[in-house]
Length: 361
Ligand SMILES: [Mn+2]
Image (cartoon, rainbow, N blue to C red; front, side):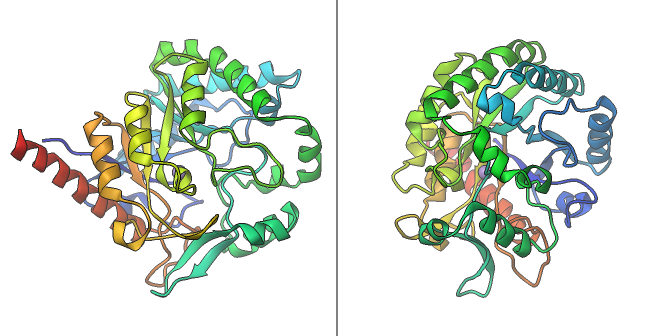
C-alpha cells in the first residue's frame, strides 16, 4: 500500500488567504510547500526565518515538504561578472535549508517573466473564474501593459514570480538580457548547477527545476525548459541525481505535443516534485486552466498519475492552480476549495492505481 506525499502550496501567514488549519483538514494532505515570500532573489536566507517557518508549519500538524521557490538572481541567468556573489548567497541558503532538514528546492530559470497568462479571472461556462492564455492577446500588448493588467486583476495579492520591486525595472531588465539566447542560458544554468552541487550532495538537497510556463518564448525572450529535449539537456548539464525536475503538467501541457506520461518515464528517478493540474486547449496557444478532473480538460490525469506511480515517484506532489469557485476570494489560482477538490481527486487516482497493481500482481 502506497500513499502519495500529497501537499499544498502555502505562501505563508500574511500572504495567503488559506490557513494551515484549513489545509490540515484536506484528507491525505501531509505537508505544504512554502517559501520566505518576503525575500528577494539573491538574498541569503536567515536561519531563524527558515526555522520559524518550519516550526509554524509543524505546529499545525503538517510537514514543510520543500521550498517553492528559492528564486535565481538575474546576474546568475545573465552570467554577469557578479554572479558568483549571488551563487554564494544561494549556497548559503541551501546550507541553512539543509541544516533545517529541508531537502527539496524548486526553482526556475525563466527570463524576466515567470508564468504568464493573458487573463487571471476568465469566467467559464460553469461560472468559475480561471487563469487563461491567448497568444493573440499577448502578441498585441507590451510587457509593461500586461504587468499592469495582471496586477489589477490579482485582487490585491502579490503574484508569485511577479514581485513589483523587480518588475518596476522592466526596461532595464530587457536591456540586461539583450543578446542572451538559449545557448547562453543553458551555459549559465550549467555553471550555477556545477557550483551548487557540492552543498546539495552534502545536505541531500534535491534541486527541482520548474518548466517554463507557457512552454515557448514570449516577448522575444528565450525559454529553454519547454519539453523533453530541454529537460534531458538540463539533466545532462550535471549528471547528479540532485539535479532534477519539478514535473509540472500545467506548464509542459501548454504545448499539446508534450507527451507528459512519456516525459515522466524518460525522466525516471530525476523527478523530485510534481505539480499536477489540467488545462483545456481551444486552439494553438489558446488555453484555459480547468478543474483537475480529466474530463474537464485536455489531459489524461489517470495516465499521468499512473506514470508517476509506475516510475517509483514518491516525492511531494501537489494539486496546482484551481478554479475560483463558491465565491472564494484568494490569490488567482490559489484558493482553497478547488485545490482541495484537486487533492482529493489526485489521491483517489493514486489509490486506484495502487490497488489495481495489488490486484494484478
Ligand atoms: Mn507548476
